[in-house]
Length: 98
Image (tube, rainbow, N blue to C red; front, top):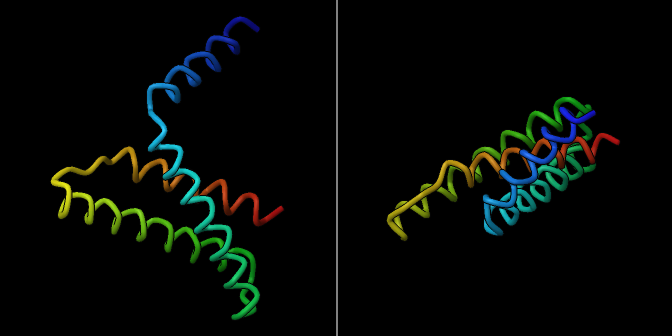
């Protein structure tokens, strides 16, 4: 039990170091993936896995586009921002599939 606690504690400490910006990327990825999958199924009538694949593809591309825009206009980008957006996309797809 102590090992499980230490794992969760280390994950919590890592998330605390990430900063509020990362959580906004996570939320954005979640929203993009969830609503893209919902729209894909409602409008196109596609199957579950097609909707999940397409919504993850959209989330990944939007994340890359955001980091390219950050690099272009602000002079810096962060791969961790993109990773958090992708994690949010996975969570969004999981929520949509429930």
